[in-house]
Amino acid sequence: MNRVRLKACKSCRAIVIEGDKCSRCGSTQLTHNWDVLFILLDSDRSELAKRLDVDTEGAYALLVK
Image (cartoon, rainbow, N blue to C red; front, side):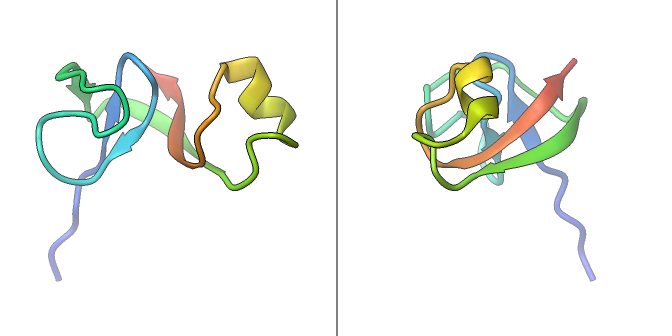
């Protein structure tokens, strides 16, 4: 079984599954060096999303190094 190494965008924290460009913000500054996966389902009700300034549902990294 092949493992997929997910990347996180250094600009917006979005998780990038494939490719070398973030589909959310268009940045090419991606890293494998991230920690804690955060799945945002309802941006209007999420306190964490407000603190991280995230307004689009999706997968994000809490810590991007």
